[in-house]
Each structure stands twice: as structure tokens, then as C-alpha cells.
Length: 135
Image (cartoon, rainbow, N blue to C red; front, side):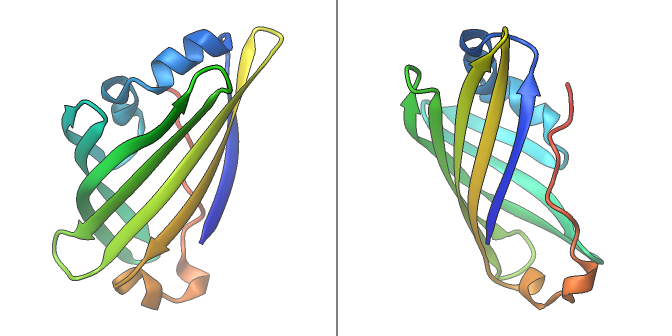
């Protein structure tokens, strides 16, 4: 599944870059996310998601695979397993930051693969892609 969304951060690119790559600051802004540890580029945590009537918690790891400050591009590879089932989720998340008038437009492209219970949920009950809350 391919997902794309964008949001604007009301600060210049350099400042947005520093904050958005600070996992410990960003994780609390993500509904359902729990950060377990950060060791260099490796992140361990859990995320609870709801797809229609199904709530699932995944535990897994993520790793920064690209950080190009000059180009304003960061890529994260993540994978996890259901904590109470056999399903899995894997994602590649590529974010591009573009400055404009002292603000930063962030475009996020996610390539997501999921196995297990969410794939059998009726399509009419699937929730819309998550939005980025303001912290």
C-alpha cells in the first residue's frame, strides 16, 4: 500500500530538520506510539493502530537508512510483528523537506506491507490514513 501526505511546520528547514529527526521529541506526537529505546540509528518501540473494528499493537524496530540534510531527505525503514498474533508490518517512509517563506513543507511517502488480521478487515471499515497532530 502506498500512502502520501504532507504538512507544514511553521519554522525554517534547518530548525524543522533538527526537531523532526529527534525521535524522542516526535514519538509522543504520534497517536498510539510508545518509544522503548533509541540506540544510534536503531529505534525500538510499539504502535497501536485501529483498522475498522480491529485494534492491533505492533512491536518492532526502525532504522534511519538515509539522512541527507542538504537535500532535505530522510528515509526510515521499519518492521514489526503483532504482539498478540502472527501478523507483520513493514514500511519504508521517505520524507522530503522544502523551505518556503520561513516555513517547511514536509511531504511523506510511505510504502507499507501488512500481513495478518488487517488484510481481512472489510474495506468499508478501514480507517483513513493517520494525520500528524500538532505537539
